[in-house]
Image (cartoon, rainbow, N blue to C red):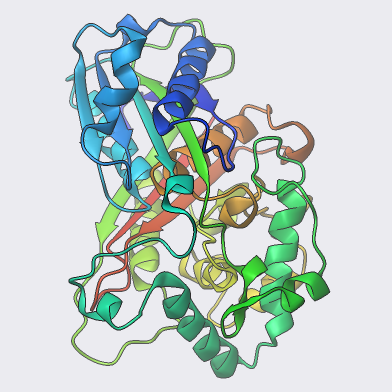
Length: 378
């Protein structure tokens, strides 16, 4: 990655803030990241903004009141992978020598939509027939449970684990632990998924990062980027195995090759647990265990704080929340703080290598529209 490092991070609270705007949330995150890096806003040559639901020119709206000097602003919409894709493009520009310091930020404000599943393109064949994300993942869950003889209680335990982690994260939407019984007894959404097995749909938040090839007087040790991969879904014309996350598996293999590491080398993972079944599928796609073995990896405690490879120590999307434009950047903020030993009560001891994975978008005929995977070290 040619010496590019992250020297500053910033993140807003995640939650329901109808009295604020996504611009205000992002401004707070950007200013915190700049302060963390020890630089001013006009030390930055370009800004990369990930946003999925905010309309036209979200980056310029954020920066207008921060008194920038006309630096380039790039707006990226890649659904839930928007922020991570913005990071990837910013990294490319730095490695090409176009800039030496940039800011990447992501934000969304979903409380303005009033609740329910995220609105999708009505022209899409699947979406017109009700294949919103909860329905899609419910189908995947049913097939996975049937194929591998997994009880529904295993799905519930994913939510229990991530809520337990989220209770240690001061910016998380949900800072309260839950029991397996509470998860299973919560309101049905799409069988077998209940309310507490789905990430909250009405969450506002923002996150920001400073990337540079010329680190200076930051507050913490710079974090190195070992791999950055963005892949798109492949149009599938034949029968599809719904228990395999093809795009994540493909992107992970490329990322491991780029970084020169493997899944056994990872200290922690932040992954896209929009639904409980997602986490199990991604354990397998990331090579953390074999097909059908995710339930055993979870039950062993390996993916809990204190385990061999904690997954979603931030609480993940299930507890922290999921403002889509911010999610990919927020995952990177978490990994940076873990690698810098700044994660407080949720600190992964001895963390040296972290991976983030976020998918994005549901369109007919592909696993996902986008997947971004990044690997970091100190």
